[in-house]
Image (cartoon, rainbow, N blue to C red; front, side):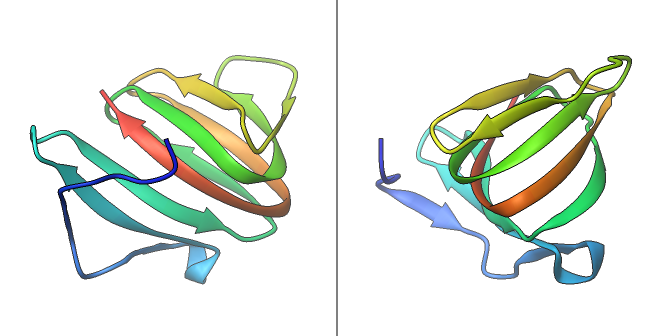
Length: 103
């Protein structure tokens, strides 16, 4: 799917890490919440509340989930799952465009 139809978009952007990650919250007709954003080249650590699926639309990075010893490479067209109440370290080498699916 290349687009979301019939959605509400929160106007104010979510800006993290001094602008290295910027996203917008999208609310689907059924109430499902997602964020759509960009992560610029950087090494960052994100904490999660709810479980997340990070769908990479474009770009490349390595990701190390909390408790894992090895990072894994991802690129556009791939995704990774992050447990709730956890964290992940992402090292972006080529600007990542993503959709974060919550829950």
